[in-house]
Length: 255
Image 1: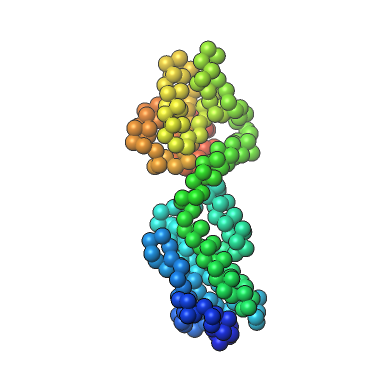
Image 2: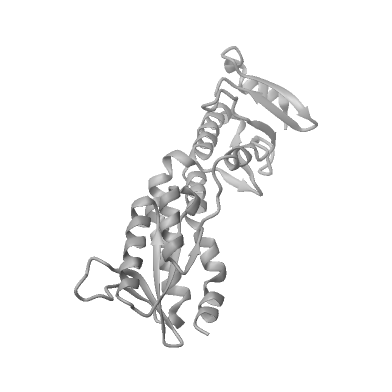
């Protein structure tokens, strides 16, 4: 990478608050007037691009994902899909945690601006992705049940009490003649509804074992967690926990 060409490409911007200095051999850090919400400067580095002469690789050395991890985990398929969509929409890539963007030297400034905007979106995923995650959780749970749990004859939206249709089950699974009533829970309102539904089923003396899958159990209020703990037979704090152990749980609970 020709650092003189890089400086020439940014020469008109250096006076506006941009600067560049060597971090280690072949790696250069940009000083730019672009900050995160807490005032920290967005971390951007330049290095030689694998595309060869005439290109520069813009990267962040994994700083965006490290920053995101302090408050938001990419621990579900939905969240990882949102992260991937951010990168794809900005035409950048993820190289083992390092966000990278290869651009021509002549378009370096525009590339830096696009890269900085992408990094800011990644670091703020916990805010703007909330509604997308909300809708994706139920889709992911439904897709997993329909594709991976077919051996347990899944049936959706059943009402075990004919005279009380308001109390419904998200999915019913069957194993060794036992009924498993499965509920997806995202948010306090759904948690309250499931707790009440389970209590009514118990009062009616229905034969079932309840499974509750949370988008994020820790995000629930204290009372909502208590209600579900009192009435649910098995809870999964996040969807990945459910995917990991539901098959063995079904076999064990139906034994």
